[in-house]
Length: 334
Image (tube, rainbow, N blue to C red; front, side, top):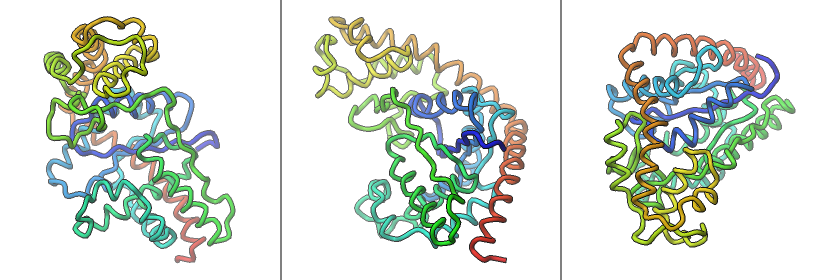
């Protein structure tokens, strides 16, 4: 691979991808493949930090792959594969487990959030998940990682681990310190039922999110039922400070139409939220349903999806093995 920007990112195969995944990650993935070497991974090893039904996991890996392709990722331009098919991820994760420090992991807020009050019952995998994420990135010596704000702390840990490895084994600049690529203008996409929570696959109510496979009728129904506000749309974003659900709908509309929030508010000021919901449903149908239809079409050809993953894993393995050979030598492994 050339020495230009090398991008790595992964998506967990834990069920239906949704609007937040699409706007926050997938659209960015597609634009990045135009000007950078890109490696995109379906991170099935990360998924099993919490128990997954084996049959569902298998299907979800293929569905996530289909969603990658349906949104415009090109397997001829980007390497697309599933994490477990490249054993180097697990091997490097163990080496990095021995480089990373317990104190560093204890500071990871996402483990505390996911483990909840009974962290003693959480899996060890969930606790050391950030070290595996570091291995994912460093295995390919990625220079840039598109991440959401909630993953920025894990990327900072990856940089710390890379720096410590370079220092411990006296190999300055062996691992590059990966830089975050955080889209500047993309707002966090929040739940349609609770504007203080991020849109999530794990939220119980399906009405909390727009799934990429939703039909036009489902999108209309979900937007109609989405929480908003009884007053008309204000002419100043500051007046939405304590109205997170209303702000979320305006943000989503702005993202889909590629307008600033200020421009959207100036156009919508004085209108009822029912007017916004009608307009929002229309643009979402135009944007999302073609992705859903293409995903469904691809899912009918599972041999093709498996072929894409196999070709991707072959390409990824070549890079991984070359780097691992050097890593083993640095560590002193035979």
